Structures are given as structure tokens and as C-alpha cells.
Image (cartoon, rainbow, N blue to C red; front, side):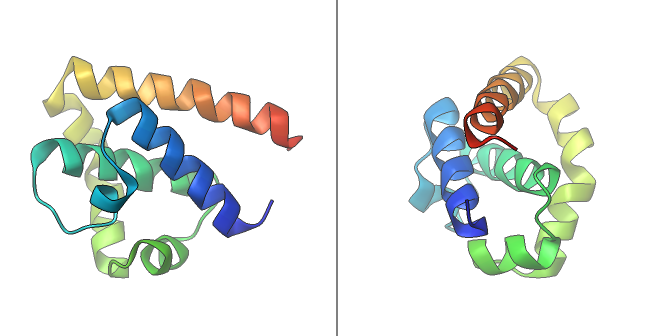
Length: 104
């Protein structure tokens, strides 16, 4: 799979779990549920080996914004509580399934 394919697959998983559309994820919306979903997307893209510069380019954000999101993720997940933690675990499980089917 190409990076763009992985990006799209991760976006779909985040969209399915959080019920925030990919268009909203890639928007500059400041609605709390969109921001939470965006934090999850950025974090999992980084876990999957994307560089901040790649994430920024694919999402249409600045590298500074991506680095800020990555550095603030642990604080945000603690503050947001059970729903964001639950979404994190669900996405993590789905990405594990993706890894198995992609033979990584």
C-alpha cells in the first residue's frame, strides 16, 4: 500500500469510529468532537510512521500545527475522558486488523 492509501484507510477508520466525516477531519473546524477526532487521526498517522511534514501535507495543515497536536495528545485524552479513550482503543484495534490484512 502507498502512503496515500494508508492515509485514506486510517481516515476511514477514524471516521467510522468517531462519526466525524473525513471532510470535517480535514477542515479547520474547532468543534470539540471534530478536534478530538483530528487529534486521533494525527496521532495514529504518526504511530504508523508518517512524518509530521507528510501529515501536514496530506491534511492541509502546517507542520507546526501537527507538532502541536502530537505534543498535546496525552493531555487532551486525559482531559476528554472516557469517550476519547474508548475511540482510541477502537481505532487501535481496527488498525491492528488493517495491519494483519496488509501483511505488514
